[in-house]
Amino acid sequence: MNNTKRITEGALMTGVYLLLLLVIIFMPGIIGSLLLFVLPVPFIFYTYRHGWKSGALMFIASLIFTMLFATVVSLPITLLAGVGGISLGQAMYKERSSYETWAIGSVGFIIGIVGIYLITQLFFGISWADQVRESLNQAFTMTESMFSGMLDQENAEEQLQMVREQLNVLPDIIPSVLAITGIVYAFISQWLTYKLVNRIEQTQFKFSPFREMQLPTSILWYYFFSLILNYIVSSENGMVYLAAINVFTLTGILLVLQGFSFIVFYAQVKKWSKAIPIVVIVLSLLLPQILLYLVRILGIIDIGFSLRQRVEEKK
Picture 1 (tube, rainbow, N blue to C red):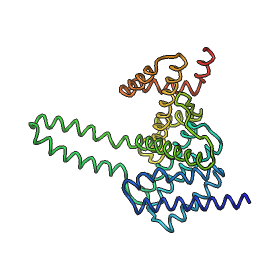
Picture 2: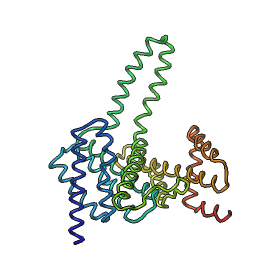
Picture 3: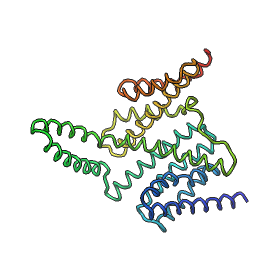
Picture 4: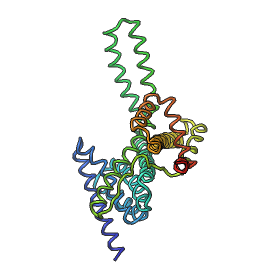
């Protein structure tokens, strides 16, 4: 009976996923863009109900049906939704906290995004870096024509050189963009799944207050391992370099969030004004080269040395 129910639910969730995918394909634009955040929900929900093995079977079935009823171009989308969705669903299945689930899901979506990057580059011959450089060159050409008419030759050359230097840096931040995309994608998909599960099962899944955010200790291992890899590998290593810099950026962002969470927690324990942590966070974002580095260290100490417990013991 349980196997029949599991198979039935798997077929239903696969059908829901394919329907959403077809709507996205044939209705591009705002509606399609919004539905991209809903795509992982069937994988999350099914994995949450039956575990990662059942989720993996649904993922394989979705890949097969995607090739049959959709287009080959849709395979990277299924890869992203499946890997990220199974990661989030398994964390919910294991009853992890909301922020642990978010962190695990973010890693899953990052893996999916890196997979899309590799597939589009290896099988479709599309280089994201080259596409960005081409777009930037077009933008620079337009900027050059605008400046040349507005300024004298000496000032125009100086301004254009500054613009050129700024544009040359942009392709290097692609990994950071990918990491931030994975974090945001995981958060929205997790929130939507919480709403769905609460409605169907009358549960109380929700994100706990930000001050209670506590990421798993494994985040530190990911961070330090990727940090070491960043010193060892170079851009010539391709996949290894891309994975290392993405994981380093992702875990770094999560550690900064952990640091901010501790600041809010400490302010509440000391009964400070709510404006103080807000000012600290704003200043950190305005002076990232100095303050964000310190906030990240604070996040590392909070996770690695149970800083909150020590603060609570001294209350």
